[in-house]
Length: 118
Image (cartoon, rainbow, N blue to C red):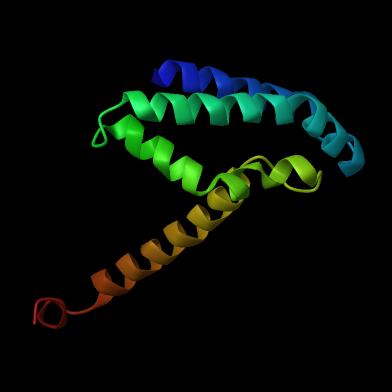
């Protein structure tokens, strides 16, 4: 069942790959024409599949998570300026977090042992 969800999501990302770098108006139009119907089908699949799963299964939890956030998940379809995901932002923040962790490690290692261990 999870494989079917991944196929739906893969089709959405394939559309994004084709329209990446295009003007926002074109991206919006393509998304509305092509991704909109795929998202409708994915939502229907999720609702149908959820009724067939144990409430405690990992897939059921993932589907509920997505359905509760559905409006936010599909917002990108109507705005060509928005990306399908926030991976670029997360990568940028990861670099900041890694830098902060590195700085904290340097500070901790430079402290005398008695300060570090109380």
